[in-house]
Image 1: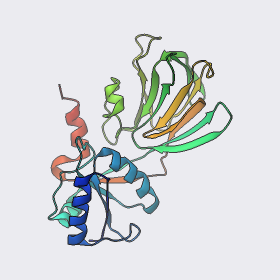
Image 2: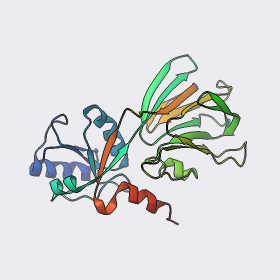
Image 3: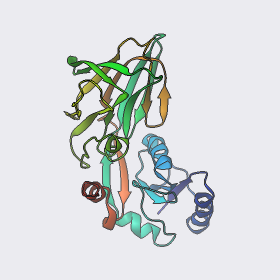
Image 4: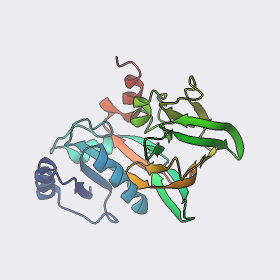
Length: 252
């Protein structure tokens, strides 16, 4: 098999990159059968965006700490592992944000899109789903929309639900909601379009982040699933992404 290897800047990742290239060679991503990512989940998210252009499957090997999206590292039998791997198909979110100066910003998010207050003032937001106002005023630290792949990340830390891979759903989760005090969020069909309007953005400014891409002083944000974009992750049968997400629901 032909592989294209990419690695984070950490010393361990770079050392393993050199080892694997010496063993398997290095091919352009356009010609490769698979992209091999060395690092942690941050590097994987970056590589997933890069791989959209070439439409290649991605096999990650953990050289970081958590590595939830990654496989265990091994330099041998790489071709056999990739051939036998279980596929998980992910669709990213598209973000279109307009800032207070009227400038539009666009980005893709693999895990989640999150709005966060920029100052000590609580964030005030109105929430629309498919152009219907579902919440006139959410007072909080922020709010996010998470994909199934991202539901075990920031979304879970904010007490949002875990969504199985393949679930045709998105999680809309508040971050430290103050009013409505007991609102815990909503599960939405994956084809929903969510629009969030920032109330009083001059006095209560908010930023929006698509994974690790941030835009500040936002007035409105529209988020929907990019159903026309499919990212294929490869995992060892013994540790498929689907199995990991199920297992995560039983962790203490």
